[in-house]
Length: 434
Ligand code: GLA
Figure (spheres, rainbow, N blue to C red):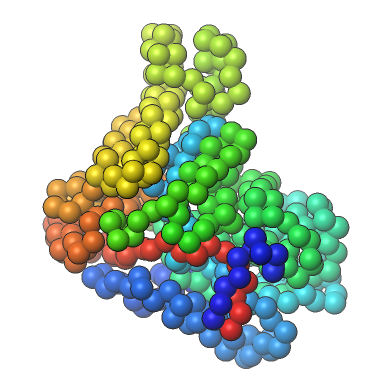
């Protein structure tokens, strides 16, 4: 199977959430305690395509489907900075969402997940301006279609069968992967000719406006701009970005799933966005006008400490100090200094826990346990936080030992065994040819 990058011009089901808010189990049985798989990307992709094909044959016929892939992501450092105009450093992983897609002659959109009965069959005129709860995960592809309609005059419907190997609701950005895979498919099938950054911007707008999550731009850009072997150092003001090599022979990424549901993620996330907006407004009035909270400095914050609401002060302190951590993290990545990069992850975790309040006991315990092991460069929560997964950067050869130790510590505390998985950098998004 060959994947053509979307830059060349050619140009999601895992377990998709059923809209109940419960995190579904992952698609792959191999996402289990103590089992690792990372060197099997092509095999996994084939498995997803096979799942899509066989399910499509049974439900809709597989003729004329074209297959696309978009990756999930982790963020190395730069936590909760994108919506404050800061810098982030995500990398696209070798897991994500595949979709078999074809256009329809009529004005209906039909969407399926290969491993669930859930299906959505809706006329394009019924879509409206906001997603509906009954559509569950299908709100993401519907939001993408709506933007192609509004921005590019697309009128006809499409049908798609999705399958994926990135666990939903775990902080690895399965939702951005569904959005981006739908966007690259519609871009290819309609010949819209959008560049990857335009795809990312369109997907971000769809999530903000149609789905109603006030997320920053990181996830969609990370998925759409992912390149083999590279992290994405992104300045969200602009935005501007640079691909920075990540050396998998020197550092591995262990994902540790606490299995704690991210129940507060949606409300807590929007609340943080709103608090940062208030902090920016306050500082703009008292210190100097700035468009972005991340443009203030630690000295600026110190100068208003006694007058500022203590909660907003803590939120702002996370943002401005995290800007220092990402600068040091990016320099460390360039130098392949993974010990220093790990130190920035540790400090980032402490700040998200103490000042930003998006960690939880489970995430603190699992990252502490990882840090106490030899061969671990650093650890922090991933994604929005509030539960879900953490990542640890580890020196190759240590993962079994680290997972066993972390599992013991975590089980001793919570009576639950976390899941572990080894992530690899992915190749980025594109069309898959069999
Ligand atoms: C979620 C959001 C992103 C970003 C991260 C936190 O993944 O979708 O935009 O804010 O949380 O870094």
